Length: 210
Image (cartoon, rainbow, N blue to C red; front, side, top):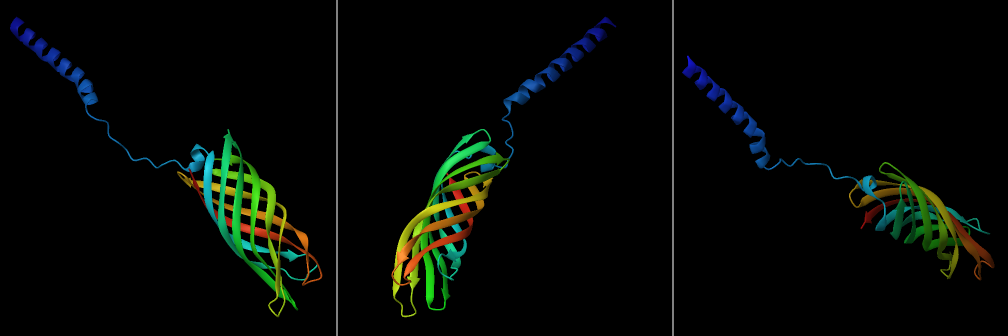
């Protein structure tokens, strides 16, 4: 009877030691790697430099003229952001070619190109940056007659607008924005008066953040 009791005790102690060793042995096996979706740009930070491609549409009016040039635009932009919590400030410059033009009677005006240098400030809501922007605008306005004589004047002015930018992948964001651009009047020999351009811009952009 005593021998049976001792044998049963050995079995119980051995089973207990075996169970206790299982977690330690399991820790020796490499952990399993699970796939996780990369965090979007907005979930991390908007800080740093970026470049962007831009397309859009321009429409507006020429001062002292009945012409209202409109057409597609496209170009590039580059900028830098600083981030303080939910708030983002930065600067951006862009340069665009434009197909905006209009002809009324014997007068034709076109806006072949323009650029801006602007400050930006906004607030981050999740993956979205809502921003306002304002700064310097510069560009060209061309007057043309039916006989193909043309006259181009470069001028400067101001630009301001609002927009939203969505960070959808690491390093990548997409934007939509509205800008109002005003180029100062210049004197034209062909028209015998001073003319300038005021235009609205709707732009879409795709940015890469370094």
